Image (spheres, rainbow, N blue to C red):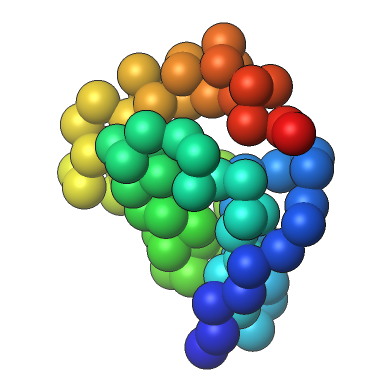
Length: 82
């Protein structure tokens, strides 16, 4: 398993079938709780490969307020694109 830092502009993270987790360098400009959410989201993908109910239940178990972080990215994510 690996962690990669990328120049991606269209996603906040990804997890490959082999378990490689990638994050765009721009994510470091987000608030730490938002970064935490993106990391949790991608790490849960190691266990659950899709966005099934089981996936979201695992995310919620780790971070009950994850929806606030998603909303922050929806509203403010564009500000990280320099």
